[in-house]
Image (cartoon, rainbow, N blue to C red):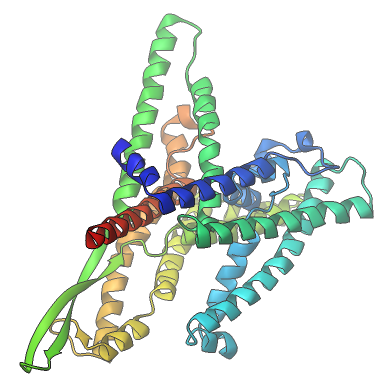
Length: 433
């Protein structure tokens, strides 16, 4: 680890990229700690921002919503806009589908539309959040139309600025900027969560209670680390499909074969299916929470509550369905088959064209079964663990969950990118000698 850090800061260009990335992340965390003027953050209860759709937004914002900070919306509008545009690009809107085939020019056009949609979604989310929290908790210190408009404009501006920071990190820094902003917010809250978990689990009423509770806390940390290892192992798991390319030597007219492989991640959809499933269930419950309590609203709330049997079953089923849907959305088997055919590549024993497409699709669906099972286990642990292990029911630090998958995935991807840059630099240095 120390050698890795030394090699990172030894390379001039890589060192500048890392310092640039850390600087922008510091700016983001600085803005996340500043509450919007005219907002009484003390009026917001922690339970309100950690449950329902607010809990998901607070997670993606790294705890910015519970403080109603300058970046209270975080990159949530941008992520939502990106997903919507990707879904509409699947031959739903012909123009977007055509842009998909235009390479970089098409990508730039899609990015421009995504930004416009981000602005619209930021306006909707900012206005809805301000109205809901002011109605429920009275967060505006000077309730008026102009105060309301001022707060919403600040929230939209903060979200667009956060999106710009993410773009700058992606272009000039290291790693995916949007993912790193979410990663930083989650990691920044971990020390506080460990301390809060220690205070809730360890009792000093007597020597016997102190020893017993401390052992339980140590066991909790061991289980937490074991789950982290499980997540890292699964995130690194891939299925390699062998690919052979036929090449010709013009002088000797001799055919040779170059072999490589097509790597497919077991969990190619990342954490998106869990967020989708939780959002679909949480959004109606959040709206209901601001309505008068009736038998109908109570029944809907019980059905959609994934901490209860019916809601939990719906939650698991949606995670599995979204995993298959998003995996097939991320990996275009038709495009892969066409690219292999154009470049003279083939899978051993499989004909090029439709047969290759069907084979890759079959393999993808098979490994997605394991990927959906993994996501279901990680998403279900925070729900089941407090029922089995009652000592963890009041913990701020949950076992498993969406945040853990995000942290592990972003960390692995960033380290992988840094290693690839280091390898390339070392290779170039060797050539120059």
